[in-house]
Amino acid sequence: MRGVFLTCSTPIFSLHYQKLCKEMLYFFSLLLGGFVAGVFGSMLGLGGGFLLIPFLTLVLDVPIHVAIATSIVAVIATSSAGASLNLERKFVHTRLAMVLEITTVAGALLGGYTSNLLSASFLAKLFSALLLIVAGIMFYRAIAKNSTDTPVTTGVLRATYFDPAIQQEIPYSVVHLPTSLIVSFVAGNISGLLGIGGGIFKVPAMHIASRIPMKVATATSNFMIGVTAAASAFLYIAHGHVHPFITSVSALGVLFGSLCGIALGKKISTRFLTLLFAFVMLFIAVQLYFKKG
Amino acid sequence: MDRNGYILERWMSITLRFGIWLSAVLIAIGLIGVALQQQVVHEMTPLTFSTFASHLRSEPFAPQNFLFSGIVLLCFTPLARVLIACIGFMKENDRRFVSITLIVFLLLLIEIVYALFIP
Image 1 (tube, helix red, strand yellow):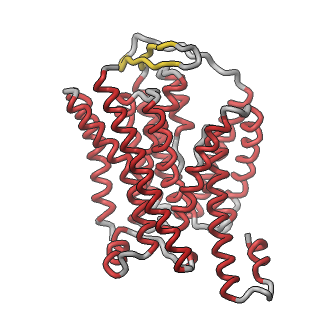
Image 2 (tube, rainbow over the protein chains, first blue to last red; image 1 turned 135 degrees about the vertical axis):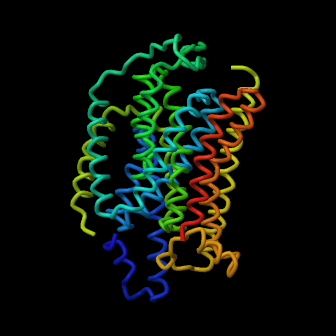
Image 3 (spheres, each protein chain N blue to C red; image 1 turned 45 degrees about the vertical axis):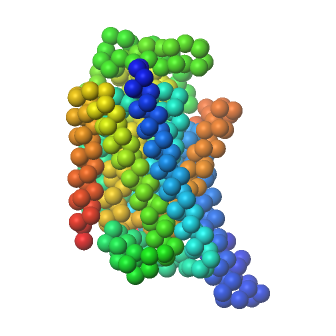
């Protein structure tokens, strides 16, 4: 970034224009960084936070608590936009979401409270460990074969959803609810602690353990993520970690990026991209682990 | 799913969309203000609820107040969605889910009250 700023420091610019140029560059860096994080985050089903937080801390030298708070606000924006669409398409299991929200909100509150007690360097190391886990999940996703949806109708909270691919109403229900409740608590905790949505943990738990169809699990998780993020957002505001400019510009970038990512994801095969980003995550994890300050 | 369920989902969807648009408008006004006043964003400090309140009293139309209001409104949007769900379940006479939604709402409310009292 410093290298880019230097181009504005040539003598033909007055001091005022040098300052203005720096501000403009900072604005576009935040917007573009958020946009790129949003595009790839949504295409890979990760959410923008996984790429936004390393970008803000490693490239723009933003303190990690501010980066996490920024990511949380961006998560609220993208989750609310996605949930609004999914509710119209009737993919969200509202009642299941409400049940799981009890543990995920409790986890997020605990995470948000803990995060504000931890040092920046410890949080950076924790985030780098999380990136390693996510890289592992992505490697698995890239090589594993897609599982087929076989919903169970003998569980609790029975419902149906309309699958547009086969033009049919599919009945399903929820089994092993305690497993999803526990995973929701852990995902909420990680969300509050490190500023990510937590869908990467919730969706597999809901789909594999509770046998919820993938489309419903993804939409229901996305629906819950907004409340999970909001649960810790107020704590970050209260501790003075929300920078009005950085947060609002990055959140806008992530929001527009994730909307583009949804449209692009339908056209592009994500298997290669998943593998590529698994390596990118590994690289970022190492960078973040050894970051000084 | 019955008709009440559809209406509840529709209202939740409208609430979320309204929250996003309103906060986007506030953020846009704030950003235009920052550009017009040629404010140095590096000198802008993070806001807390208490500093925001004092900023509002001294400079109510400062661009960063619009930015912060947009962010806070965005954070309140999922909370409003929980409240709408609670009202919807009340209309459906589903006492079990009214209680569940109220627990979630109370957890969030406790956190906000706690956050407001952090000095």
